[in-house]
Image 1 (cartoon, rainbow, N blue to C red):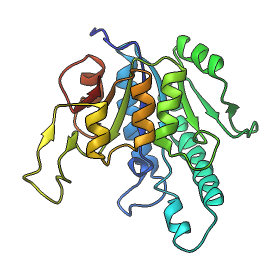
Image 2 (tube, rainbow, N blue to C red; image 1 turned 180 degrees about the vertical axis):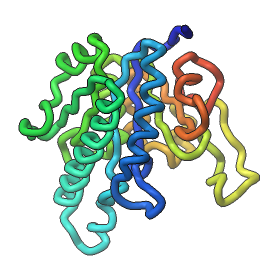
Image 3 (cartoon, one colour; image 1 turned 45 degrees about the vertical axis):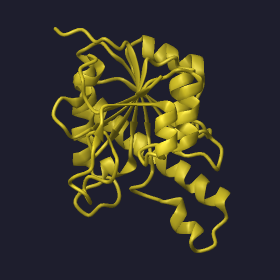
Length: 238
């Protein structure tokens, strides 16, 4: 059996990763596919925490364009992340994997409140912890929530799983000649204003020397390769 090089990771997933062909909502089939990929990491004895976005259900900027209050729009997004967390947890549980959903906004009937030491204890016991509710505060993205939780649980790596295989000079779907970066420093990523993660999240990782790896979730075995420190995606670090 292969042995993981990273003992503990935080996996940041987009809400869109849960969508089906219609591009909206939660597809149980896609939740099962992601659960299978996460399950493969457990065979490497990796401790896994997950933060998932809400773009498949609600995008706050749509509300802002109609004059919605920013805090209200952000709170709606936080609630949507909890729905996604529950869907993914259910798919993992059906594979026999014990999970815990924790939320920054208390809703004890369906999830535990996020408590840092409790989350760490779950990880040490081999459970997968899915954290919903963002940071619990408006004006922060789920990328920032992922960076914050990764630092709090002392993760070795923050993996940003997307639909592209790294950071490019331009959108590779629009320009096939776009150049891919194998490595960027935090400052380079901030100066380039890379679209895969917001500046607040990158700055928080920089201040705490937490590496960020951007990769394609749907590339076969990409997560396993990342955990075993194989060259893949784009690494953002010191």
